[in-house]
Image 1: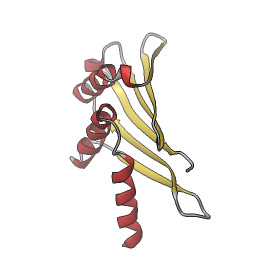
Image 2: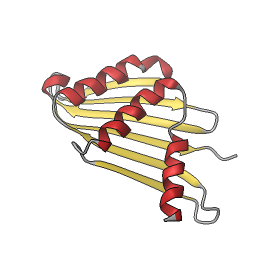
Image 3: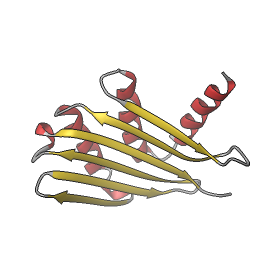
Image 4: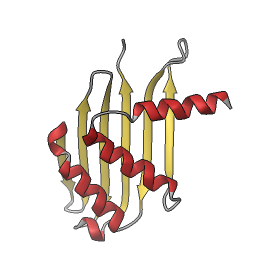
Length: 134
């Protein structure tokens, strides 16, 4: 029970960053609690110190509206870090937003297949949070 509480507290602290990133974090966290999608969260710890070194969150998006909403959030936050939008074969979209912080670096990635987000399928958003050494 203590370990579960510690993991939850760690995840809560890891998501406290600038407001821009919080929009993406809130989208993933809030929507994952509704039970409409698959959500995975993994915490990696240093085996010696037990300190959190990395957190990875993955949410599979339902077709259409979720993918479109998430893409809008990514586009709105493009100025907060290094942003890229890559399209392969005219259909496979990958949007990446990398943000460096004082205590942690974050990488946000949205992937979907389709010409337009509202008609997309196979959507997934991934958040990787890497803690910096103190």
